[in-house]
Length: 116
Image 1 (tube, one colour):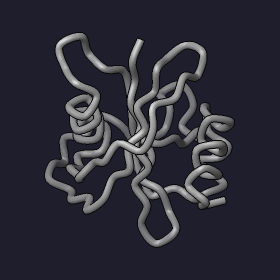
Image 2 (cartoon, one colour; image 1 turned 135 degrees about the vertical axis):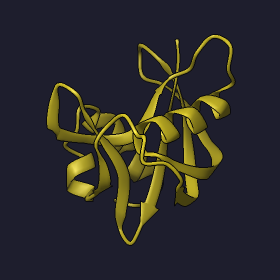
Image 3 (cartoon, helix red, strand yellow; image 1 turned 90 degrees about the vertical axis):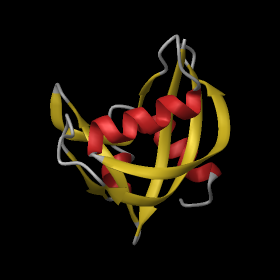
């Protein structure tokens, strides 16, 4: 299965959404790729659905986490265009995204990006 996630940074913080089952777990924006879409289209859809933001995305890497083939994007120029987002979002700290539901994946990704 394919999924996407994006690192969108601003002033040392990261655009993140919380997990529905635990509002204290903040992770990068992302989700599953539908059968009829490309990973880039999925990234745009997930970002808009979860946050109401649009952004420019550039593919950074494709990683296998054992369950998903994860297309990792770097997002730039985020612009809030809708208040109809489905989730809770914020610019989360490094500590928050490194303690989220996908903490090991997030920490490895940020290390590879030379952020930590």
